[in-house]
Length: 167
Image (spheres, rainbow, N blue to C red):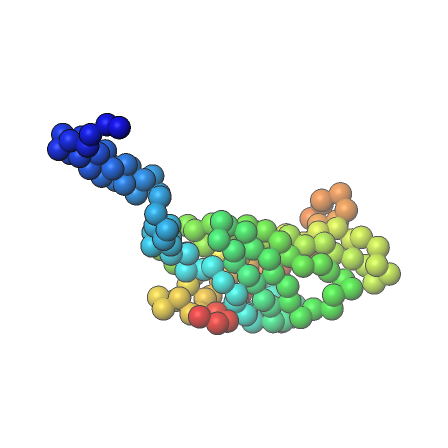
């Protein structure tokens, strides 16, 4: 059996210490990831909004509705509203940060005729500004109805005010 000498004890201690440092630097250790997880972007979460649409040229009101949007980490979003569901599907799309508290959201949803046949898509762009406290938002909206061949058949503009649901 080999004798454990003071020299081998020092080498063992140094190599063990180096291994521990290397593991920590590479993300080892039980809760290292939990302690360094990035804080999500302030827009991430569920929001409820009030939307008013108007004709972009004449400013004539086109209607108002309430909506829900879930902004996900990674830049995706899904939205729906209280308009009759036989005429549309849920909106899906992406969001990107354009400045401090400023975002652009691009959404699309399928449109249907009253008989259930496809009518095309709706394309929406929301330019959002979050309040400094991160609990409310305002936005301007542009939207275009596209037919089944992706030709623009109607355009509208709008405004939105919203509030975060939950914390």
